[in-house]
Length: 368
Image (cartoon, rainbow, N blue to C red; front, side, top):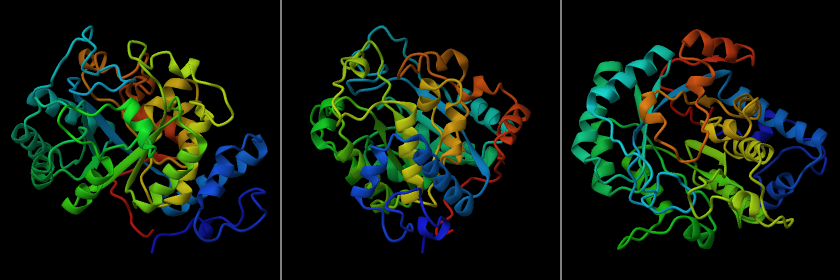
């Protein structure tokens, strides 16, 4: 049985001055999402960090990010690689380039590569299966895929080829809000929760998550999202602030969004609250400190995520010529660049946080 937060932390600040017992209700999550008192928030960070230490420990799993293609058939209202962006130079990595990136990930100490792309129909199922087999055979790395909504036969084939995990963020459980930011593809229905269930049935470790501060996102729906992390029993949880590309319909929406009390802000502090609460509701999940968080907090974003419950970081090992073109939002920070391209630099930065590079593939340790 997974460890409850109550087993790791006796109290959490003055939230009703009671022990952390039982499940986290949406009402309790909501109170913490609205909390702005710094001393009380410090107790949230501490509680999440304590649960992290006692469940998954101090190792930090490195996942080498390979952005294999910036082609995308979707017209998402915030993303810079959406199909309507005709100014973007498109690319699709070849097999040799992918293998070279995987080799670089090994040199940095990564136990996993994450193959990420837009919803690119040009990524053929058999071609990707061959790449997965080659990475597994040559380097013994775990393989995570993050390729959007794909057909069941494709997902099954990639799992058979050796893919270990699949990441598909549901972004928000508010169906109307999701439809506004993620228009469906012509002739296709869109049910990411159904796809997550399919991935689980196929034997993948399943990852999902949300954006924080989407224009129109309300605190109540974000609290419901966090409860879903537990109900879906997610193996991986990705949380990042909403950062739109300026050449999209929502390009100016982060600044123009209404400032009513119920609009969730897309701040680093709010993203950290969600990371901490994700750790408390799903103690044994793998949770990254994300690039989006580091992009809006360039001084301490990665460290902040690691201090409030995260246990994963993702160095970008995409070739530089392509990395510049994978512009889902502008001025994207790359962990690979920030820490420089050496394992020693990564170890030194993590050591300052009392953390160290993990070994092995970094699968979820269920029930720890």
